[in-house]
Length: 390
Ligand SMILES: *Cc1c(COP(=O)(O)O)cnc(C)c1O
Image 1 (cartoon, rainbow, N blue to C red):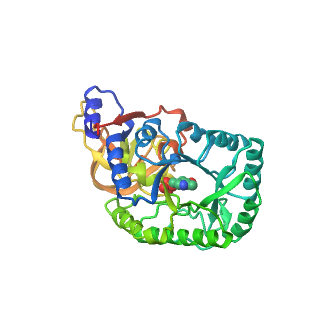
Image 2 (cartoon, protein in one colour):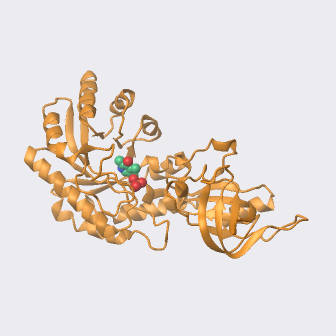
Image 3 (tube, protein in one colour):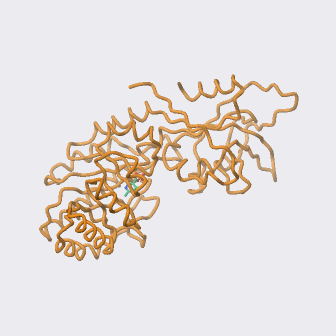
């Protein structure tokens, strides 16, 4: 079943107003297979669960990826191994749960983190594999959210890395397995991402050599982006993958871990809603939809217009005038009583009328789960899973 078919069925049954998330699991499966098969053998592909923890998405990904990256006890419960656990503000119960689950490695985000993990591992008489999450000193170019190179709550300051390595080396219940460098967000440039990966690799090797570490893994996190402003002009995955192959001589037997979130699932989800009203106000056109930023907060959070397309519905059987707008700029707003409930700001449309359906693509990551569902107590959207088997 396709999105258009779903809309036609709902309209035929007069089962509206339409408001749904549609996840295309067939698309997801194909996309991830292509990503995975393009990677060199020294790369492992992990999925960052926070991008979309929907159980059907996790189930679709499980046989295709090398593992999951989780950042809370709740996420840990949703996936099977292999798992990498990293989170700022880890609670004792989460650390214990992660140790008991036998995670492949745990991120160390501070000296206190290191002390706690050593102590709890000692209580449990285990040695916990750790990765030191580094907050790089230099700014990372091309990143949408600054997570490194500027003061943030994430990771260990690069200048403190030698000290934390030495502390870890004196401990008996942690073993340093590698370094973790998640520092990019929504990067759209393959060349910049390759430079970042190469820089991480060199830094990890220099600490390895200086301190005689027996590390295995260099984890470069996620951060490969989606071009919401111009979806045709995508991150060039082929350039990135072939650039990774060229790193082979630099790898020295190390494994490179990618933890992709947004790039993995964003294109598999669409948020589909019906226009309830269209009007003009202070010379601006507004279309009001069923739903809004309490279902899809991403455009409001990033102060952008979310990419959209219109599915026109010709039927109008009501005895009064159908409101609409033609050949004009329109702002698409939701059903909440706040001026911030805007998904599209002044974009040109050929025509948009009450009863038409707006499709917001690229809503498969950081969409439903980052939204404030309870605000205004409107019903939740439907969740529909499209799947053309294999
Ligand atoms: C959020 C996150 C990711 C995924 O980031 P994307 O930008 O969605 O690819 C990977 N690793 C860590 C540690 C994260 O916090």
